[in-house]
Length: 85
Image (tube, rainbow, N blue to C red; front, side, top):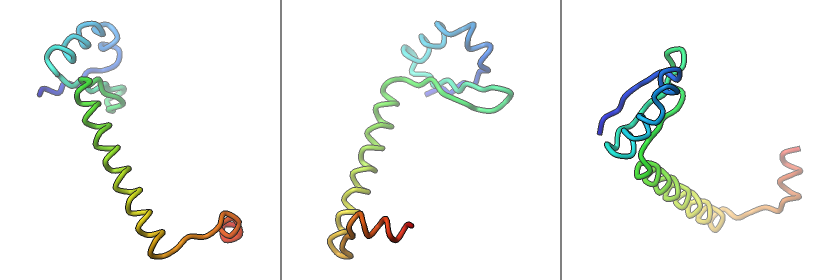
């Protein structure tokens, strides 16, 4: 899969072409402004993979938090407010 960098001024002028390159060729486009990478245009398949990965990570974190709650215990909201101040 090809990755290309382009500044935002040029990207604005070539937007339709960039969208076609991403959707048809599965190219990844990195948008830059003043030489810094600021955003990306990626195929939907890439986005779906990222979302699935985040969901899996979130699920893992939730399972670990439940395990900790079972072994360490929990506190009430009022107690937490007291501790935080």
